[in-house]
Image 1 (tube, rainbow, N blue to C red):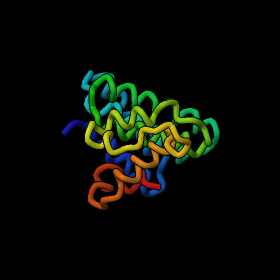
Image 2 (cartoon, one colour; image 1 turned 90 degrees about the vertical axis):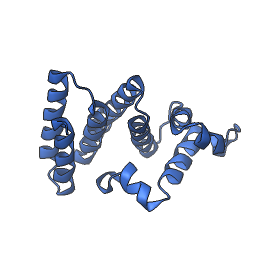
Image 3 (cartoon, rainbow, N blue to C red; image 1 turned 135 degrees about the vertical axis):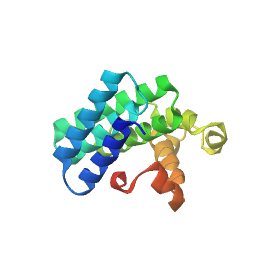
Length: 161
């Protein structure tokens, strides 16, 4: 296994135990190793994880930094064509924007295209208010997490709300 991946797992354990500053330091170390070794295997997830940890640290500036991390993770995952990581980053960003009461900037469409054509075909497409991008984000999030076995794989317990 790759060391940045293991550092990310260790940071999740630290955060679960309430050691958010140590978890952030581990993610920073993992990102440094990713940049130094030029193996970008887990880079998108590291940025998403850093966004989650910054949110746990708290504050309004933390929300802005977390949003920047989620958007960076989303961009990296799209460039790498890593659909699972792209979906995780998009869901994290949707959750943050929802808590802030902000529009999702077309993330519903992004989530629909990321989820695959079979899943996207089942999502509503009419322009009714209840079918806004926010509603599609929530619908996709709920349907993706309805199976308890898939919940643990898609959203580790630390990152669930």
